[in-house]
Length: 429
Image 1: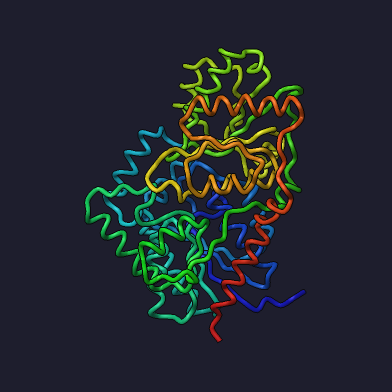
Image 2: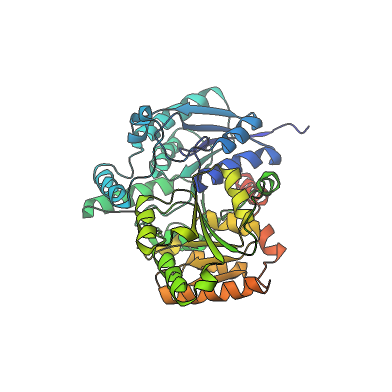
């Protein structure tokens, strides 16, 4: 067995037993770092109030035998942890709490935890030698706090942007001061970073435009991906014979809604009930009360299968059982820079994808994939025509298939190898 020569300190608020795509990105990096002779130590959260705990990811983490340091802060999620798990609130409630939170906390409400993470990092760095520090963001307060280590240590710091920070699609600047302070904090944090990793070219373009001191070589693109081992371990679920299953996996929070898709399908039930009877719409994750209400209003209950929230491996198994996978991104500020992790789970399955998306990174990913159908997110007529087209191809056993070359580009083990090369390029002698 090869000796582990390099050590990396990973700072990640979102980490197993928490679930969803942001958690998977960081966790799978950590998993495959071991393969490339890097030993990770992770600083993450202890028990917090959250709506997506994942036993399958936690079991996988436990099998790796890495050191995980769990710390608490006084941020809302920690303070509410005694209430146990909860389901996502209604979108209007989420927006209200988000507005209040962004009014009070800059850059985010995880500041208390991020301060504790900084203290924990300082303590462990006094005891052990590390070759690199890797910070997963959001929360961007973690990046801001950890960047302060630059004045105390000579260890390269790498920041992984899963989303934009300044002027992002999630930002709500209550006053001009909030906007100025966020930009200022990001500026000084980036000044302390040795390299920046982003999930897509649009985020890179925004950063280069906003902060001219950054060079093209400072920012590296490592997209989201899929773990081939998940597809080997997951068990496909049986599907109804002679029916086409269209599946959505994920949550409708912030930039997504099934409204236009459901209304398009409703028109098919009226125009071609014979076709509608041969289609099932499956939802894996939190469909949420307001969307169940919409389904009842449209009288689509007989066509809907709600699987509810499931762990990651179960989700992969259900994806493998579908005929077509669907997702959408609604029109929002700077939404062209968002690229949901679920797209690459879809790509890993090799299934055809219906993407209702605006111009941007997500559309570009679907165009590269080729086995895709692309339409505007809110164009009900266009969505309906794509559903008709997809059904005809399904009926004739002619649904498109992607190339294995495109799929293999997004294996998480290979993406982690790219990350390790970035680490190696900045190692201190």
